[in-house]
Amino acid sequence: GEELDKLFHDVVQKLQFNIIYVDEDFDACAMFESINFRGKPLTKFEVLKNRLIYLLEMIGRNNFDVKIKLDVVRASINSTWGYVYNILGVGDELLSEDNFLAVHCDVYFGFKKSYEEFLLREYFSIDKVNIDGCNDDFLRRISEYVSSVRFSVDFWAYQRGLSYDFDTRWWSCGDVSNALGRLNLLDIGHFNSMVLGALIKIGSKEVDDVQRPDVWIKNFSKLLWNIERFVFINYKLIGARSNHRAKGIFKNHGNLFYKDEEQFASANKLLLKVSSEDFGSPGNC
Image 1 (cartoon, one colour):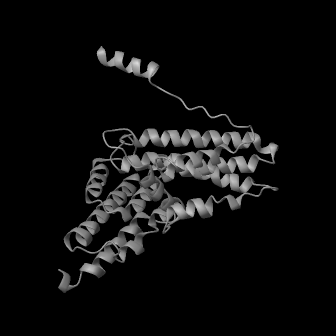
Image 2: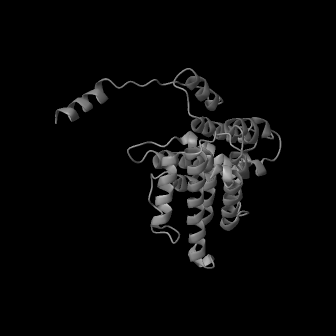
Image 3: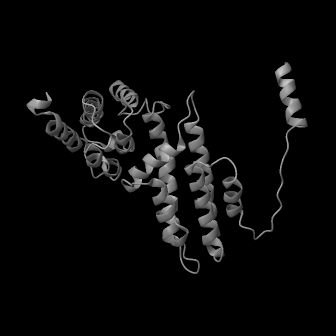
């Protein structure tokens, strides 16, 4: 009707394009950063994508032999970033890609005081590129990181209640989804990486590869329940500060789960132990 006619009129009559012609050897990634620096601030997720593409340009500048490898990784980056935007943009409420980036960084690398500092100035620093030599290892690190981002975002969306794609998996049940929903309501962020690491740990396994799946599900559900119990007592009932010692004790457990070095049973014992030490005395009853 009239709305469609107005939309058509605006698109064909009012839409304008700014076309910038540059030389073939011009650094497009540097231009991208310069233009956006003067406009709306980029998210850290957008800045990281540009950094990764820029690193590929640096690697291939004097090495034409790696062009096919670079094209594959570049396509993977573009596809992954588009996939993340699509996953986190589904539903009535958008999930922040920067929040996901921060939590994923802690899960993939271990706890970092500043994920932005680590990713852009250390791990994916331009200084890491060997201009005149082999960059196969660095290229592999980029590729593996991008693959992990794509694999993990589905679990993050499920964790935050935005996606239900895992409802038919062997480990998914009402106890798990309900516990995740309650944790979201409690909203204590420093347990997010622990939960995401645990989700990835159990979610990446096929039921045929797991002995006694019922025990896995029981311990996984118990872990979520123990986290909920700890958060409720520690932060909601007692009113502990956000820098309570538990934050340091559990900060690396997302990475330990991700690397398959942590078991649900041992994590449950630790949660109960810390709870008992902090709140188990007669004075705290």
